[in-house]
Image 1 (cartoon, helix red, strand yellow):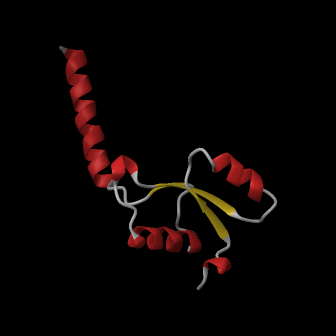
Image 2 (tube, one colour):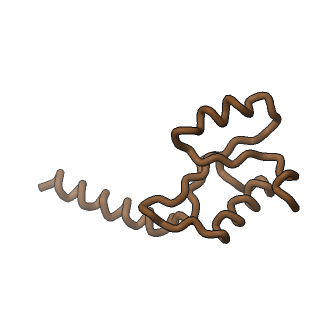
Length: 90
């Protein structure tokens, strides 16, 4: 399948997001924001292929973080919550 057959638009939020939205507003496209490369992380071909497949299959969230380790993020958020509740109780 070529990219010309994809019926959605993938965009990376940032300084050009509004311009892209305005330029394509008359087109019948789904809009997704894909955040990638946070903290200097590499953007891999596998990651891009996965995100395009999710979009084409209707499985992509409106805001998506490419290759985000959700389990690790949840652990860190719980750790920070415990620390902040400990500080306020002292």
